[in-house]
Image 1 (cartoon, each protein chain N blue to C red):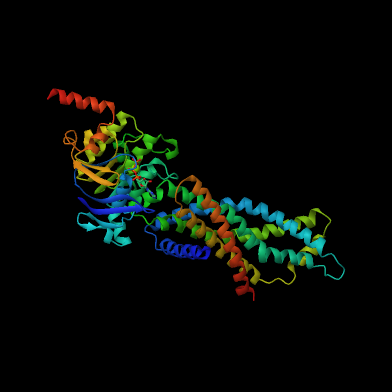
Image 2 (cartoon, chains in turn purple, green; image 1 turned 90 degrees about the vertical axis):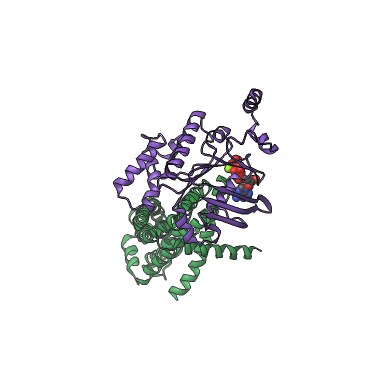
Length: 254
Length: 249
Ligand SMILES: Nc1ncnc2c1ncn2[C@@H]1O[C@H](COP(=O)(O)OP(=O)(O)OP(=O)(O)O)[C@@H](O)[C@H]1O
Ligand SMILES: [Mg+2]
């Protein structure tokens, strides 16, 4: 469980996060949703410590990140897997090299065990056969999936995904969502996903945090999201024609 | 204002260096990376060093002969002057200025690209000390290999001079080789190698520093690599003066 308490962050005098508090549960898919520019990436980077908030607390199962020294942070991070918005694969390594990387750095496995584990992760993201390619030879969606395989290689306790399915076609996107949801439940991971894709929200959103212009506007799950009367949230959720029609259809049945 | 900014940069550089020179987590991985950096930064520079050294060696020999041709100057002067210029200045300072352009921009753009594509953040998130992981192998690898480049440059420059003596009638080979051997001071070679090692550390660490703190996108990466070359060149010249004062006097 990760508890975030009252964090604020500004860049060059412009405040991006306003006193945000929220809780992310273990074994659940926790979603942060919000418009582009609402501060989702900044919030996620604050939680993992890549961006330092001005004040507040960030508790990883009770351990406060803000009070740790560099070495403690480094140890905590061995329990964290993260998928970046731009994939952030290592250009100079092959696909297999990328997935093996955290294993080589941090596990005490033998070479053969590492290979096994890496191949298993690649298989889970449907990428068997691409292991000797370089990131520049892959499509954007394939890069994303390699990045997911790399993030889950060490069986993290906390998994952060910044827009795992942006730039993917709907089918691959659903596969990725299912994959994330499956591993979350299977291993009891605390998974945090940034997204503005309503399909994911309605598909896997067990704990949804809605950010609006840096304020935490609403918290709930996917069944409550239809019935919310929060104006900003309904504007966001029912922005597309398709969802407006779904809402009308649901309302007309009652 | 500029001074304050430079002081600030120097402070950040020092902090960065303490992060770089902490002990590597995985010696095996780090040493393997160091070998590949030696290939990339050192061995790949050999053709450039050889070509430049041969030509400059030849040019120095020709210019010495043309400029100091006079009955009162002894016969060995040309060979001696060529040798000493090569040992004292060319094969260390000038060579490193040239390498600052090649190696410095290479390092800065590589690390800068890793920064803007969040690869460095990805390393940090895994719990890797990214400064140590990326920069240590480069600095150590380049530092270990630079004496090879320095000695190679000395030899090939002299060969360049010899070529002038052999293939032209500007100076005879016997006069030139006699000059090369006259009043040889071994300390000059050590002096040159010490300078090379210091400059190599300046080039690789300053370039890494410039790349590591890039903010923004591809444009800033380009700017960082220009910065790396300019700053390391200026520092090389500064340390050239300091080291010469310390080591030759
Ligand atoms: N390093 C930074 N320096 C200055 N401003 C920043 C920085 N990072 C983010 N911002 C600002 O913070 C705001 C929120 O950015 P953020 O990347 O968190 O948005 P987001 O919700 O992730 O959007 P998207 O869905 O498009 O990824 C933006 O206005 C951006 O300009
Ligand atoms: Mg974002």
